[in-house]
Image (tube, rainbow, N blue to C red; front, side):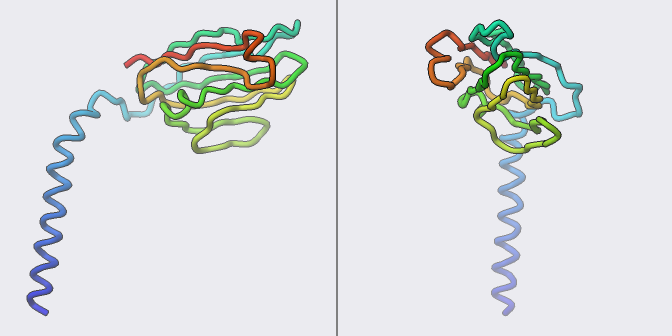
Length: 153
């Protein structure tokens, strides 16, 4: 019993020391990420136009890694549209999405907005890069309903 207690004590001590050493390596690498409460930067995007034009407005957006954003999406057109940017969604931390009195949390890859609908996506970009935005309704991407989302470090 005494031998088992000694073994468990050594194992626990080694584990604690390993975590402490690992934190000395990992934490400095993440030191530039602002984890303090932030005021969200508001950005608005229209999916389609009231006149039927198939485009995102604006179709180019630039975000800063580590900054909290509140992306207000609206669909002023008379047909549904998708805000699809899977690689971008994989590169951000989603705080929540609010739409129609519902709050959604967790990973998201595309949002469907019916005519006249609105949604609000709060997120923090984590990985820099350039990402493709498109509407996946058949024919809309081909008609030019595409965009570019850029995250700078």
